[in-house]
Amino acid sequence: MESVIIYPGVLKGNVKVPPSKSLAHRAVICAGFAEGESNIDNIIFSDDITATSKAMEGLGVEIKVKEENIKEENIKEENIKEEKNTQAEKRVRLNIKGNEQLSLLNNTVDCIESGSTLRFLIPIALLAEGEVTFKGRGKLVSRPLDVYYEIFEKQNIYYETNNGELPLKIKGGLKPGEFRVKGDISSQFITGLMFALPLLDGDSKIIITTELESKGYVDLTIDTLNKFGVKIENKDYKEFYIKGNQKYSNRDYRVEGDFSQVAFWLVAGALGDSLKCEDLNINSLQGDKVIVDILKKMGADISINKNYIEAKSSSTKGIVIDASECPDLVPVLTVMAALSEGTTKIVNAKRLRIKECDRLNAIASELNKIGGDVEELEDGLIIRGKKSLKGGKVDSWNDHRIAMAMAVASIKCEEPLIITNSDAVKKSYPDFWTDFKNLGGKIDEWNLGK
Image: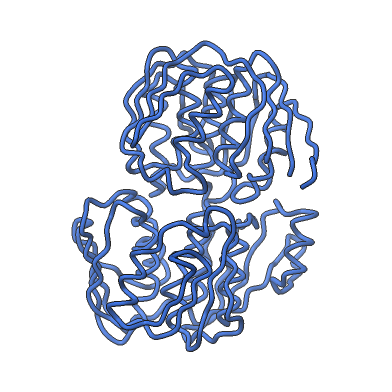
């Protein structure tokens, strides 16, 4: 278990935003289905992207890492471990030789703690012949998969679970047809089906039975599929029509910067000093791009330039934030609200209770420990702003977004802030603490053992 102690102080300077984890998952999977070679640039091996890359390799996809010195090597377990111990955060190119005829080279998929890997790969694994076991760690073991269980039962696909939890064993073939999916649990189920259904021998339809939340993530999936030659017809987010017998096309693709990660730095800039965030696509389809609009509504001084987005020290105020389309932004927006004038209400955020942790409970508990005033609701939060926080000891709940949000809160603490389980950031942003230091953050890190 690693911990950090952060000494209060503003952050300032330039930061190159890490590549979008959401788009990296999608690009690796699409390239894995495409005949021929694809090159995927701007990849960082966070734990989640490592899980998806290894899973695709286990299904017969050849993936090589091309370093800056053009050295290539297969993504073997020992190579990834060495990479993560030395230069895990180095941006690399993946050279992927895909094949739509998947072959089962490894019948166990270790999703680590990646919900995307788990939910994206389940329908894909049903395209390969043989039994596949999905396993995971932490909260992922109990995250809901009922959408898929219902499909398995309808299509007579064999599955076995541990009382509904991982490990999950599946065997059988996914068949084309009509798939009814709730839209208010996770868009990851929809994305998983969208990867697999175009390859079936017949047309399919995904019918959304409730209002679809996180539409931005579905947009990312459809756009990435389109770039790799696969078409999905979107009927006002109520139905998606997928023609069968489609083929993925190989291509070169660069993963753009991640708006869910830039959110931490934009809030840090608004709370502290001028902070420029580079390597972003201003015209991105990422739903979390809404962070810019939300912060502006709160009064933050945010400017959009050709090559970067800049946040400057600001006096901000409370507003009502609808989290239905941007749940990943809630932890850091709660920090922003805790240090803004007046009251902020975050609504439509119930899904945060089934993320890496119960994020509503986690962010409320940890901020209140250090002098915040956060009231927890069933589906949201009420935050009464203060000029500063006390500091003290908090925990990440083994959740990368809680760890990073609390790090940002340290800017306005009166005393040092200790964050335990700080290494949770490896899930999505392994270089977070390095970037934090490079922006002027004063931190000490240590390992407390297990």
